[in-house]
Each structure stands twice: as structure tokens, then as C-alpha cells.
Amino acid sequence: MTDVARHPGALPRRIRPAASGEDAPTLVLLHGRGADEHDLFGLFDVLDPARRLRGVTVGAPLSLPPGGRHWYVVPRVGYPDPATFRDSLAALASVLDDEVAIDWTRTVVGGFSQGAVMSYALGLGPGRPRPAGLLAMSGFIPTVEGWQPDPGAGRGLAVMIAHGDADPVIPVDFARSARRHLERSGATVTYRESSGHHHIDPRVIPEVQRWLSDRFPDRASAELFRG
Image (cartoon, rainbow, N blue to C red; front, side, top):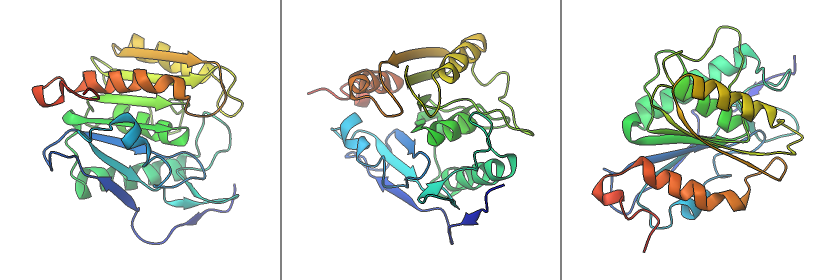
């Protein structure tokens, strides 16, 4: 297996406060392979220009070639290395559950590539609290020895999946498989497959904005992304 080095210290995180203060819904965005906690931070202002959501990003613990931060070792796409996956998932859950004190009933967790994989693990894992929604961009539900999705975790869960049909890194069949699994488990899936590669397609952004607005139907969020 690839030599694994860990970044020293606690997992870094960035928080963009909501305009209304502390008691606001939360959007967690997790970066992909080789990036860091800064990578998706600017996306908060794109998805939520009125700052009605608190935004949280977290940096992954592993340092692997060719650089940047990684959530797990990749022996094969779709099948994360069990040891590094479990350790990173535990560290990530500790940061969000205990340090940031996430209220998962008012939180959408999402990410890109490896970050989407970790979002699935947080939202679907056994014993995990169910979030207000899952946003998976160019990712997959992981197949990992010792971990599997809770069979009941998808019931009533809102999920948005966005994936490029020509993705050379994580083939689109992974997204299609995730959709089938989630719909069978009772999730409400918004699925958008666009012509593109391994990236966040700007053409999907307006629909992500609308989908996020629908997750928080209270009066304060009724104007989300409007006016």
C-alpha cells in the first residue's frame, strides 16, 4: 500500500457564519482528493449568496502523493482502503459532532469526489444521525470491508446527485448505482447527469440552489437564494 503520512494536529476547519448568527441551518462541504479545506469554501457564496446558511469545511487528515489532503488511500476506485477510510471517518465525525456541534436535523452534508464519498459515509453509516440532506457531486457510496450503509438510513432522506457522464476518474455508473440503491432504500433522489468530466458543472448550480432552499422550509429560509 502507498506510504501514508498524516498531517499533524487536529483536522483544520473553516466556518463561514450565517448573516443571522449562530442559530442557522448548516451546509457542510467536503473537498476531494488532493485539495484542502479552502477548496470549496468559495462555493458557499455561490450556493448561498444571502448567507442564510452557516458554512463548514474540514480538511482531510492524510498527506499522499502528489500532494494536498486526502480522506483515504485508493487501491481501486469505489473501494477505499478500509483502515484509512475508517480512521478518517472517525476523525471527521468527531470534529463535526463534538467540536462544531452540528445539529444534523438542520444540516446538509455534501462534497466533491472523495468528499462526496465521506458525505455518504456520514449520512448513511450505521448509528449515524440522519442529516437534512445529502449532496453528492462526482462521488460514490463506498464499498469498504467493515462498513456498509444502514439499510434504513435512506428512508425519507433527501439526496441530490450530480455527475458528469464522461467522468474519467469516477465513472458515472457509480452515480447511477448510488441512485438505484438510495431509491430502493426510500430516499428522495434528485439526479442530474450532465455532459462533462470530473468537475462541478456550473450548469447544475441553479438546481443545487433550489434543492438547498427546499431543505429548510421554515419562514426564515423561505426566501433562500431570492431577492
